[in-house]
Length: 294
Image (cartoon, rainbow, N blue to C red; front, side):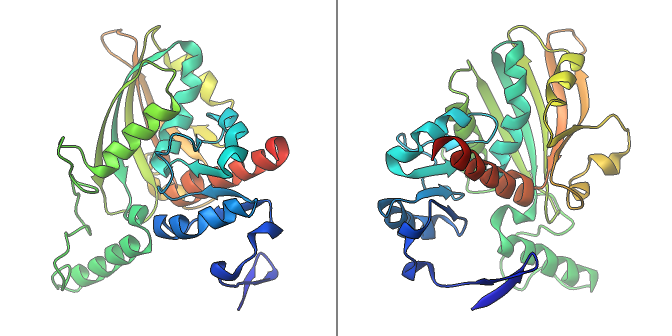
């Protein structure tokens, strides 16, 4: 079949029938089961697989990468012909934290994440839309036994594990610890599902061994083209909804130092989890692979 994209007509065929030896890099963004079924064949054919699913994120011999954070791990790409992209929430957190390591080792990070319905893909977006329509028409939110996300806030995102954390919280904690393995880091995460279609918000408090000042952090963040520090007090500009329009960037706001002068810093970040956290990170990884490692 054919589809129109960016002014061109592209041919779409089944991945199972594709000869992966024809290409240098393959992007997988169809979920863990598809990656597990097809990525080994693509890697065996000589293509480097860049996988956006969680299928290979915890494999010790496969690099887990956030572009502009640990690009040096791409040097290992040819060992297994596979690179795992970190989750969008990890990308959002680490793109803000990594520059701060220039001021000294990071010690403690506490994150409250406000997660959009699109965290679960199209099904989550459809569920929020359908429940919203039903509630606005005086009906129950769902005919099925679903948690109400429309006009609601859910303190559980993912499956609750034996230690009390959810799978979404552990994912962010484990990926952060793996990528920032050189930091003496303690991280605590609470993830809340909110009735927003796209865009994650993260309320973060970070403590460094050497202390952090707002001015220093501003200077480090502003050196990145796709990170914007908001000086405005307009709450709309700080919201996930503002991320849907315009170029994909991460916006940082509410930057403030600890009142007790203990050296900790708090900030709020928002980013489009689909376009910025997932897609742009993967594209950057591919560009770096082609430029420096293949």
